[in-house]
Length: 394
Image (cartoon, rainbow, N blue to C red; front, side):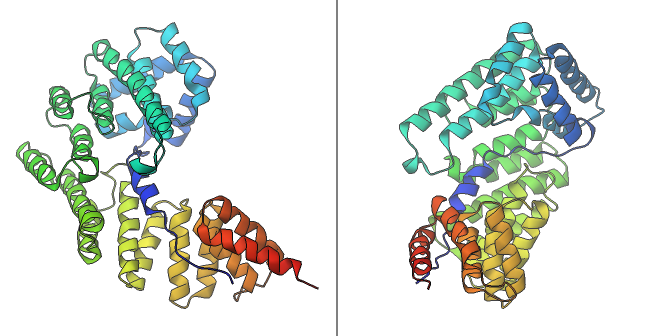
């Protein structure tokens, strides 16, 4: 018999949140410009690339673009392709005094470290993976500390160094924040980055986050930015309620407060607001508030439509709400995006022929196989059962 358990990989995308860097902002952070930057790097046109990045920084220093747009202009270097490593070394060799080259190298190595570690809990992470994280972090740290003496306002160097402290304790995040704020006493992105180092999941606490929020108020940050920072505090309260206290109703209350405070999420890191919406949907689903859960998952998809997990959960809820056509569409989309749970559920829709989808057992089997290969335990059983049934066909 085909089995059915919602194997939801919540931990994976909760950890993935820690990797997020906002991909937003006009002009210098547009997709077209990002592609051009990558093209210059791959073509080894380092002088042109360096000149472009200096021009972006000059616009920030003149006050023509804000610090968030300036930060987002470095997104092209937050690249997961390890084959690009020689290009960064070549850029540094060609221009050893380049601030941009050192900063880009640090940015690149940060994501290499995160990829080496993986997204699982520490208990499920090998020594080899952790060693890969440490080695990449050390390369990033070396490049970033070298960059500090190469620019008169190395704001993003401090930003990235603060980020590194979440994964090791080689540096003092508070000291880095204080040094960075000397460059811009009313700056926001350093405070936002530092706030994440205080999250309970990274060894901080709600108490520390609330204290820092009070400090930000005293520094005179404007109301929208203070609300965004407070949203992170409420999100952390939700995490504590969910993971430590096992109080889902309390987690839902805090998460939904965080969403209200975050507004459109534009002042948070890329992926952060989407994750809040997902977690709110997940909490409401477990509380059996299916209409509310559906609404949060739909909002998450409106923010980013390429996450298979969200489509799979939405499809599951739509099925429970008696919406088979919508459910089938959502499960199919989640399956196509590679989510093992959605793949298993879409395979069952095809196997049984759930109206309006016609029965097609031949088409169902490859989806069972993909879901099994992706680690869905139910799919492993379903593959065996489906093959057995197919073999018995007259």
